[in-house]
Amino acid sequence: MTGYTTYKQTSTGGQPLALSKLRLLLLITPILIAFTFSVYAQLPKLPEPAFKAGEELSYKLKYGWFTGAEAHLRVAETDTKFEGGKPAWHIIADGKTAGTFDVFYKVRNRYETYIDRSTLLPYYYTEDRHEAKYKHQDKVVFDHQNGKITANSGTYPFSGQVFDFPSAYYFARCLDVSKLKVGETFQLKYFLDNAVQAMTITYLGKETVDCSLGKFSCLKFNPTIIPGRIFRKNSKLYLWVTDDGNRIPVKAHVELVVGSVTMDLTAAKGLKYPLNPIKK
Picture 1 (cartoon, rainbow, N blue to C red):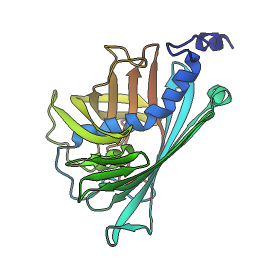
Picture 2 (picture 1 turned 90 degrees about the vertical axis):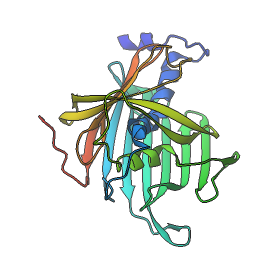
Picture 3 (picture 1 turned 45 degrees about the vertical axis):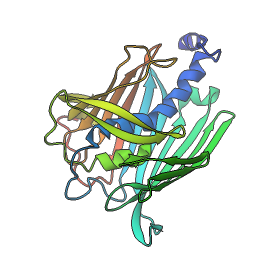
Picture 4 (picture 1 turned 60 degrees about the vertical axis):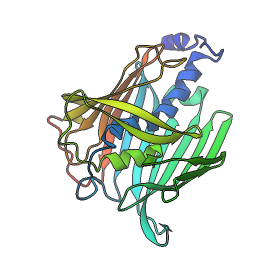
């Protein structure tokens, strides 16, 4: 238990640093995944989607040497239809604390979205968060024809393409990235914390990256992050995405005020295209 005393430091908000970082691990999971692909928002779509029903992806998030959280994403068929009978895919993202962290601060979060099979835009998004004694639920309806988002907290106008986090991830995987140049920046609009916000991302080129499933040829990105109690003024967020037909994130690394968090792909099945590591 020598590492435990380190986690007992107190954060700036008076909360034990362990709990503060623990909560961040689960909150940051969908953010990391979505930001991985938000760079593609202004690029043309591929002729057909890069995923199919039955795809499942699993990740582990580590704070230093400690595995603090796990995340799982899957694509499911659904009979639910929208806007007069248009078919949709059902996307489910689950996050939970793991190991010793689960004893001190149990988190069980689920994020779900229904996306149009043609445009890949979201129709309906829900989140169900259980973080120790804190509970939060939200239901969000996207009205793209009238530029209106309706959530539990109220109604919010928007223009252009706007996403929730899971739908942003799957939309972006289906865009053509072949003409990206190093140093180019792009933006994606997303709905978070009762507001439509935008994130700027810079493409940094290609790198070979190791993860739990092997070594992969990847595209590297650097999204901008806002400094504060969690991030330093010069904190960096780096994301690595497979340079193949699947376009899935295999690794992410973000610097915090104290330490850093790493996200690692641990399992992938039901993919539309073979996952071909350079070396296992």
